Length: 484
Ligand SMILES: Cc1ncc(COP(=O)(O)O)c(C=O)c1O
Image 1: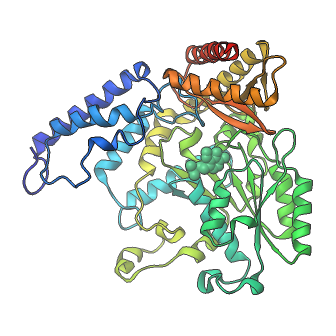
Image 2 (image 1 turned 90 degrees about the horizontal axis):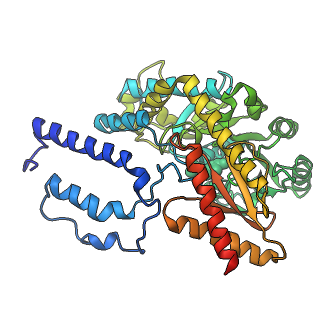
Image 3 (image 1 turned 180 degrees about the horizontal axis):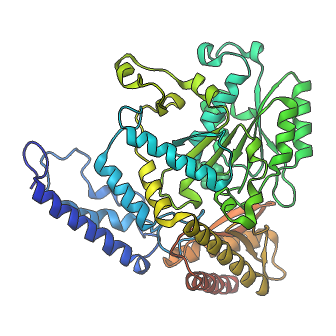
């Protein structure tokens, strides 16, 4: 039992740590036997708990019982090797251990002085990732929680460069003076773009969605025309978001060409390489990041394809001075801690003041795998995705609906003579049925107004055997549902 004041005693803490370590080890060892999707109704988990804060403390025995009885039945097993939703899962042993140690330290990386090692290790891992994805040293990095937040910060810097002194004077009441600031992204770019526009007061309608081509890459001619039209209408083109590895199909925009357009018009170029950046680690796929070196900002997510668990998103910028000029602000009570010279205080580069020691789990993952280990895992994910695509192509009535550029495969089941509407509904039902079975998980997406199935391979535990099983389940459900 925990003391009335203070914490666990040393020996009790040691015993509880062992208990939790065993619990985690058992969880990982049995993950394949668990249903990926829980069968709980909305509200079912919460109903186990009182709406009032607990009056008396509980023992760890009780807590662990509640964990197993009430919480675990509502968990989606993202770490299951047959979980192929989104981009898969970045769970792995070394990173998990890093996260546990970071929780034990619980330091705040807001300034260098508040924990020098947290700040310096952040710089170190950011340098490693920068090198791994092939960005030059002129890019300074900072870790945020997510790519959506990183993008918002990048666009805040772009907004400042328009010269309206928005940091100080804001946007309200300055419509005529500033004109609508326009940001361009392809129709495949992540919806975080709209969220950033909303948060920055730039307005959702000023995010211009540019048509993509038949390979789901931004059409640069359309971008140029959109910018010219906006200039003619007195609007203020501000930034372009290019994507390396889009959410649906992992397509890659022509970044170098887009950089030329940005240069010609004086626009901020943001490259969203949240998913695709790490592919550049493979010597044979280095070119996916071509042109990113010309960007003003680039995002690479550790928690998509770099084996760093949620959350870890690296924003790199060549314009760290601008980012700092937007966000640097030292409250009086932090003057002492922020005063060290010749150091980085990451709180100066974003909204967040308190910052988790995210660098530790990145360090354990990158250090334990090494470049070779990272490369071979990414190459294996590519191999598995290409193999899955081959199986699809060999099967009658199945087709690949987008080029397999990374470890994402989008595909369609289209029995002969079936209308597009019925076929869309059938593909959705196949995904639902496979997921409901609990032993595989995939998602769907909409491409060219058609519903398609989609898998993403990203888990270090996923093997050919798992993929073969998922493929078998898909075919089984497709055959069953098309007979109904
Ligand atoms: C290409 C791309 N960019 C950005 C994001 C947003 O990522 P986050 O969840 O880190 O905000 C996603 C999410 O899947 C994505 O696919």
